[in-house]
Length: 346
Ligand code: GLV
Ligand code: MG
Image 1 (cartoon, rainbow, N blue to C red):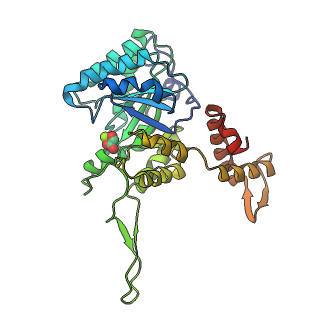
Image 2: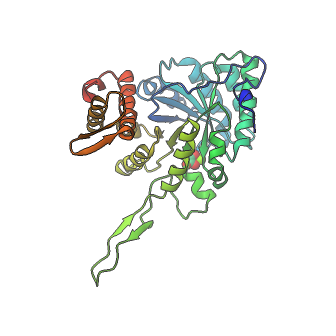
Image 3: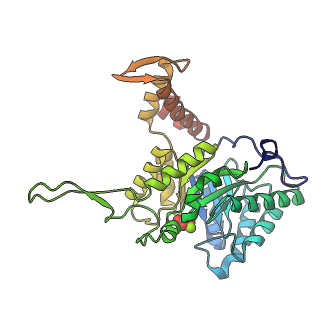
């Protein structure tokens, strides 16, 4: 085990000190851009103004013969764009791939000071984070990067799920973890052919009552993993995210999957298509009715202790803390989108 005093020491001479707290940021959607396509790169300034995070994807969905072009395209778009308050991330190739070393050395060398977070796919255990941690520190030191580049792991292998608590706590560089349902389904030999979402055959049947037709209730295939990931992240003080939803034609199912994740504690989800940006914005911004009720709780218990009744419902220190989560998130939304102030009465 690493000793407490060493945990926050830079891993290379001249690298910036690791952060003790994550920056407070609204991160409702991580919007994926394929940087090898010039037409897509040209839209980045417009997209950056609509989303909380722009991510240049170098891994899956980028053809093998376009990997170098994607990396160069990412560097070009990072250099050419003023991202303002919008986060800039990249998803690098897997640690066992022929591309990842150049991904990191070239990107940190060229745009290390603009890059907020590196998303690492197929993380299996804490050892993967330790490798990235050390390498990033060496590159930060070499290129004089001033603030530490954070790391976000994708939870998308059975081994990763088994080790999720150790991954979350592996380094102060950890920003968060995203559920990767497509790779995870394959890794577990789940019998699906989808990118996230439910399955019509994953159901419980209502009890039989004579010959009456029995209702079937579809269940959430991702509930267990999301819950495990949320607990690992919350305990380690980092942020959990739902990942991709591949059926762009089914906005309602995408919204339902995102909302389950939001209610269970996730901060955001991936958006792979522009039509999903509005869905993520709606779902991961708190509901105005919930905010109004949460404000009543905070107002009724100014010091956060005791017990009061509001609208027939008992409130105490624990509901005060829940209310604070909701109101703090609403304030974060308002800080980014001042027009939301009226909606939330803030
Ligand atoms: C994402 O990378 C996934 O595999 O779902
Ligand atoms: Mg994947």
